[in-house]
Image 1 (cartoon, rainbow, N blue to C red):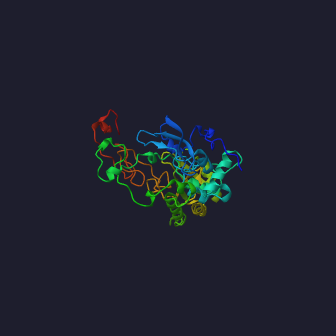
Image 2: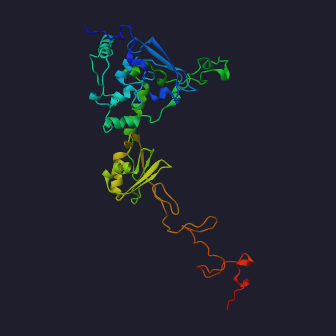
Image 3: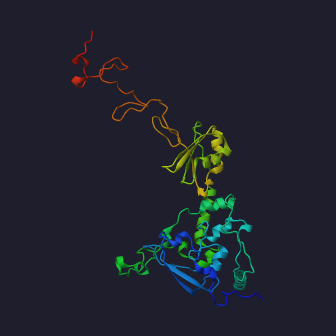
Length: 369
């Protein structure tokens, strides 16, 4: 018979000095005050008492608390409050359906087997290396998870719950009510529970994300434009971590590059190939699958530069070749040339009308013969 751990005997678990939480649940305030109450509630997974932490993530947020014990959260690498993956911020069902078998660990659903596994783990007899949180960044599973994950914390998840009295039309607190005055939304997303999310079974949020990902994979490929002279691809969703060298490394495998122009203000870039066939190969291979440094990027064909302007994939002058006229002067690129200065013959041979006496050379001291 296995030796029971100190925590199972009623002593405090030394690993629970601080909860396992994601950045979203902690909130945007860097100064968070928490209350700590040992053995205050039973874990929603293993039904054992654990240390409960309670805090308020922000001024407009509700009070949150830990729902799982430290051991159950560590075995699945999930947050103790929202039960989402700590590395990608995704539901367990989405993460485990993408990872390989050797990259994940199956948690026993039977109460006896689960209790035995947790006891062995806490007693130090079971050295479990689940691989969660250590997914290879170059693996195909990691690229899919990075594409599905949210890159920034989603603090709207910390908002107050909906006021049930307001939904019945009986709330008389008005602006002083600490709950949200909104009507509840019906649907599968309204029926969620912690156990289904933890074990990755029948999670409506995960099923919605997987369905959307499947629709993107089965979507039509990126159609090339009819103009064969266009060999520029537009890349959107670029952040500060993506450099011009990263873009060259991602696209150079499909053909020789002519130029890579990074527009930081617009968070996009234009990648121009020497040959049209290379651009078509890159668009076919990287559409809906381009990820650089964990950032999923969008891909589209560039547009032909308009005459006298800039297109999506173009830049510089139009085909007219002319120089733009100064502000307030008609003419320039794509139109008639700017007029000559007063008193100077134009291309048509005539003089421009004189508007002021000082502009007439005959009124000056110079003599013309």
